[in-house]
Image 1 (cartoon, helix red, strand yellow):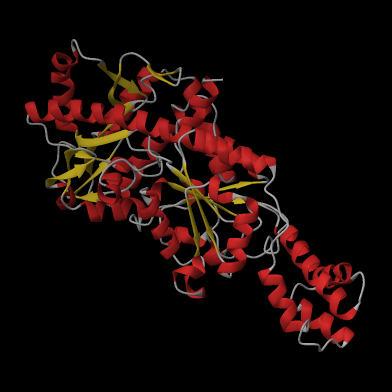
Image 2 (tube, rainbow, N blue to C red):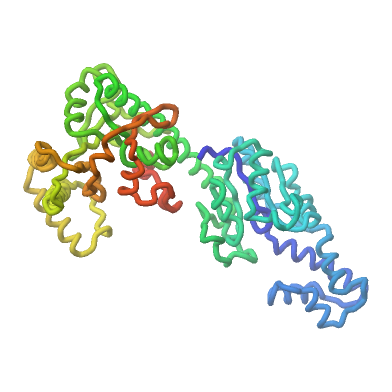
Length: 488
């Protein structure tokens, strides 16, 4: 997401709504004193409000038997709604708004409530001079336009000339401020305050993308969002060049292949990279991969790319580290993995035996930190055992065995294939040959690349309901945390 605009809720987001309530009670108390001579009613109104914020003026009028039409319950409500608020915008909020504007962000406000009251608040806070567009939802046609109705957000997007996915919305109310994500790809930030609705459940179970404790934390979150966006733009542009390089070799040498894994999913669901993906994947048969490897050198010579091997996976990467915000990003990040298709025995038992042997070898080749929390007790014992076995076997020998076992059935005709060097959780999926038979060119970013014509069957086997993105908390770059550590 390329953030171009920040839109705010008003009450309990840009100022403390309790200040408005106190201001309203003061205005009502002045009239109560004038009409009835009752002193200290402001404190009494506040006590009733703290006890229960509903029907405060009715309860006060009933308690004191107030019936004069100049200041009965109905008149108190009118005074409260029409009074000139004695509220101010904090220096902290002013600095944040000015700072965001100085950085080039367009600013807006979307607020619910009676127009006269909301406009009076806006005037008292001096917000007209600090933001570009202000929308009071009731002014769009009534209370049915209050949040999370998307009309105000669509209107704001058009008035600011900014697409919805380039907007950040900042609010406080779980009951209505964040459910807009159900309809629009807006990034949301919750200000966790002490407002009336702080303990409300999230509407439709949709939580904000980020939670902050005060508006003063917003610039840091915005910096993180723009950092992520810069990284996304950087990584995707570099990976697209890698894909174009691989595609050129395959076209020139007549080597059939398809986008694979997350890159295939991105092509189908996003017509490009998955927004939080930062590597590239292609797949081809073992025979075609061997051909690719045999001709690759003449294309690599004089280019900025090189072939690599990481355990069981080969691919193409940048020779030299690429600079991102002063952080060197080496080929271990910016790479195009090449996955290989090998035959699957028609006998399921034989296939399970083949997979077990490959999983054992994958475990033996593990290096570095192991995420033990992913495994149950049996899994931990197996992983530990394979790690120990791997300590006494050379990497070269393990890779040789892995390849031999992967191609074991390539000399016979079978009905299925599998991606023998895929990730641990995926490579035991067999694909009918018909799924892999044909490819079609599909839009991908600014280019077109081949994908399996029967991609739906393949992606369903891999991901299930692949058109539904994962929860927001899982939409994270794989390599960015390491880069951020390296940049410190």
